[in-house]
Amino acid sequence: MKSRDTKAAFWYTIGNFAVKGFSFLSLPIFTRLLSVSDFGKVSIYSTWLAIFSILIALDLNAAVVRGKYDFGERYKSYLSSVLFLSSIIFVLWLVVSLALNEKLSKVLGLPFFLLVILLINSYSQFVIRFKLAEFTSNRDYKKYITVSLVNVILNFTLSLLFIFLISEKYVGRIFGMFLSSIIIAISLYISVLKNGREYVNKEYWSYALKLSIPLIIHNLSGIILAQFDRIMINKYYSSMETGIYSFAYTIGMIINVIWGALNLAWIPWFFENMKNENYESIRKKTLAYISFFSSITVLLVFVSPEIVKIAAPSGYLPGLGLVPIISASYYFVFLYSLPANLEFYLKKTHIISLGTILAGAINVFLNYIFIPTFGYSAAAFTTLVSYIFLFAFHYFNARILFKKNLFPLRYFLYGMLIIFGSIIAFYVFISNPFIRYSIILISTLTTLRFLKKNVLD
Image (cartoon, helix red, strand yellow):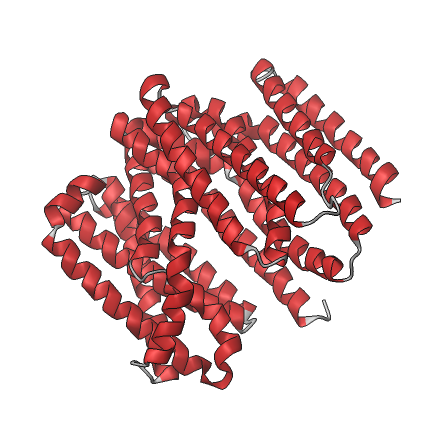
């Protein structure tokens, strides 16, 4: 904790847990205030919001952190100029979208007034991420956490208010999301322009666009891989099925939140040991990491029936059977992050982008084939297959790029065996909590004993 970087990483982890935790704790409230269909409509809107928040300003926030190192004392003027450029791009988007509003509304499945709200909300989300990236580059974790928490609390408060004020409850939820981001984005936007006081600079614009534009497809592919299935479910079925699936996905994503926090601690340790060529230490800690995360995943899968019953009324219960499959998908996100971090260390970022693009394409293709035939639940399985492909892609690329077999395949097979075995056991004992919790206890004790005997000694 004496290191500034370590302290920042620690507080970023705590802050992210607090933000995600607050969002998760608010889930039981919204699932009870909104019908399953309304919950699905909000989920569709959120998916389009994630997509348009990248497109609306050409993902220029991707150039924020790097600019800190290349422009030094000119960093503030660089930020104000790039943000002003994003405003021009946003206005162009707005003009074109309004001119094509009928066609765009039909494609997105949103009425005209929600289309306008979506575009403005997307830009406000971009501005918030832009400023958070600045806080990250300056290691200003206090402001980062403050803005993040204010954003999620204001979102929750205004959403509750408008759900009660507006007859269409899903519109109230969306309007709360929209208004909270607008309030925060305006203050952040003004602060960036006021601090930089430079608006048109071709050098800054060219630099930022060269960094951001190549990442658009990569980031969009990531969103498609994680969220596009909801749009396809809504297309082939209805917002009711979309709501059930989205709820199950939210529960399964707990695994991803935990991985995201742990990865913040793993990456600096991994990079430092790669630099010092401590390969044997990396192998031992990788085995420990996989063992620990496998145990966490088993725990969450087996307690998911109780989580679902607390988090939502009975209308969402059909999604319970999808939670283990979605959790397994995010377990493979954890697995592929290990070789992907190696690729990032070796500066082979184009491979990371290629893998995400291919996995996204596979996911869309499989969804088009299986969702209409087998129902909305097929989306969970197609997502799992896509993430398994992504793991295999990164693992074998890492083996080719780095010859020292840093991650033995048996480590990953060991983790997969535990997860797939636990999923089968879950479906067998879903209605027997005594056996499920006994398995949790045995799994935890076995993992701790294994770590102590083979890794930690």
